[in-house]
Each structure stands twice: as structure tokens, then as C-alpha cells.
Image (cartoon, rainbow, N blue to C red; front, top):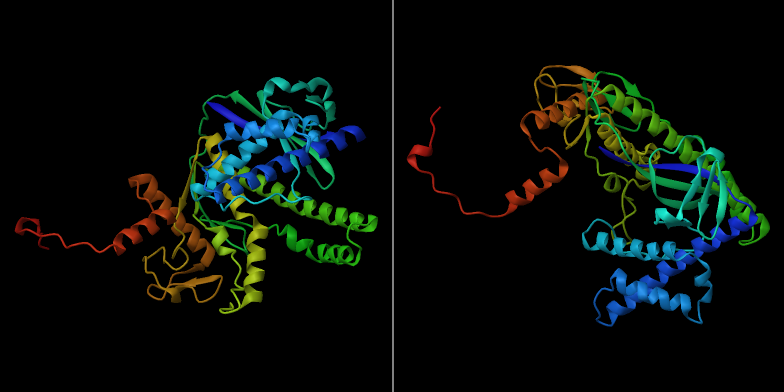
Length: 415
């Protein structure tokens, strides 16, 4: 099978190369914003959507025009890829997968991509990489690069430059070693509770550094914006944010790798994290309730990284030859795994589950994980679709008024 994989390394550029990379990232941001403004103006004038080929002609005019001659100093392929990113953003918007494209502000994520592998040279023996108009650069080769280089993305984070090298290689079909199946219930008090009773404690990297981060942000707010001291304070805040993200990412990678290696089938909840972490403030006419409590819950949910954990599990289970199944999470913690009675009174507290019919008692998260695994078995055994999206479609179909069908005598079965 063919495997696409990215390897990210820290670059060690000199001063001139660092300035050049900042200019190239700014040029890509400028081209993206200028193309987006052109698309909006064209739409308001009643014109059709400008595709990539037509927009690339505008890019040629911008590079050769008297207003923006500095664009010619940047490599053309990253600028063209910025136009492709805009076209992809529009396609995602038209398909309903994302919101309308927004302008990229200065000071945001600075990155650019070299899409042509022929222009990328490497010397892994000496830990060097060659990029157009940047020359040879050293990098911290923390692990070997496997496969054939497809593209390279340069980005900056907390003042440090990185390169993400995407490769492709042929690997043997995975041989499934594990034979067990497990259900996972995601939570805040417990990051992941397994159907076998074990659980993973939350890392909560943001919560651990929240007090220090607030102190750094207050110091930054007292400085004059744009001054040297303000930039130093901003760099300190950025470094702490980077540390929080690195700790979370490290925890998620270790947890997902361990689960994917030990189980052949993993069943998780089809959680809509964006809806679950939506703000409860409301509007002036209809203000929300329990805003402070909901804000704390949203912060805890986002600190866990549920969506990223699911993304990592998906491709790691595929690499190991296993299967990842997402099921509808409704009533998983209210259903008794012994008598299958569903009642909100079964879970009066956050942690304790006690069935009002048969009296079965257990931890509520363990009960939820067991029910999640049972739903996953139904999907694997008989193809039952119990995902949240399918449930919504079934409810919409049931809400459509239909004429009752005629029932003949031979269709009626007697008990």
C-alpha cells in the first residue's frame, strides 16, 4: 500500500534566510488577500467565480506590475499555491464544509509551501535541505526521512522556523496482530474511559499553565503596542502557548499510538466538538444562562483535544490494519448494559450509574464505554449505521409527511 506521511523538523537558518522566509510568507499572505478581494469585487459586479487558471494570469500581472514589483523576488510556486489554497477554501465553502474564506491578518500563521519536488534538494547525511531562493539550510534531523519527497511547507512558530516534508512510499500491507475490540468514552474528568474499566487521566496542559499565561498576558497588555518591550512580552506569551500545544500533542500521540497497537477495533463517540464547545453568551435580546459555567466547560473540552485524538486514531488504526468506528453518543451513559433500560434517572450524578430497574451499579463512564462498544459491534456484525449523521437523516426523513400505504390481508402477521 502507498503511504503519505509528513516529517516536521526545525530549521536553523542564518539571519538573511530568516528575513527571506518572513518576506516570502508575507508575499503569500498578500497574494491570498488580494485574490480574495478580487473574487469579492467580481461577485458584487455579477461576475462568475474566477478559477485558478484565470487567477494565475492576474498573479503574473501583479508580479510584473509597477505597484507590486517586490512580488517578483518571491518564488512563484508558493505564490501559485496560495491561489490554490483560496480556491480550495471556496470549494469547501460551496460544499458546506467550512465558512466563507476570510482575509489573513498580519501576525497570524506565517507559512508557504513548495509544491514541486523537483526544486527541493536534500542532503540527509549532513542534515541539509535546499529550497528555491533560500539556498541550503541546516535542520535538526531528529528522525530519518522515509520515502520520496513530494512537497515542503515552511512555517514559523514562536520565532522558530520549521519545515514539514511530505513523502510517499510503498509499505507492506499491515498485518493485524491484535484481536481485541474496545469502546472509548471521552470525558473531562477522565480523558478516555475504556470498556474494560481502564482509563487515561487528562493531561490538561492549558489548565496547568493557565495562571502563568494570564500573568504574561497582563504584562503584555501594560506595554505600548509595537514597542520593543511589547514584542518581548508577546514572544514570551507565544512561547508558553507553543509549550502548551506541544505537551498536548505529545500526550495525544502517545495515547493514540498505544490504543491503535493494542486493539483491532476501536469504537468512539461521534462527537460534534464544535457544537459542544459553542459559546452560551447568546445575544442582547436573548442572553444565555450559566455563561461562566459553560465557558469553563468549553475551555476544558478544547484543552483535551478530542477532535485531534480522533484524527490521529483514524490514520493510526488504518496503518495497523485495524478499524475505527464512530457511533451516536446519545443515551450511552443512560442505558443499562445489563437490562438495556434507558432512563435519565439511571445517572443522577456525574460518576455513578445505578439502574432504576435492575439495580446494576458501575462508573458512568465505564457504562458509556460498554454501550459504545456494543453499538460498534452491531455496525461491524450487521452493518447497522448508528452514526449521528445517519440518525439525523432518519429523523428528517421521518418528519416528512407521507401517505399511509395500503395493507393487504396476506401482509398481516399474527402473533
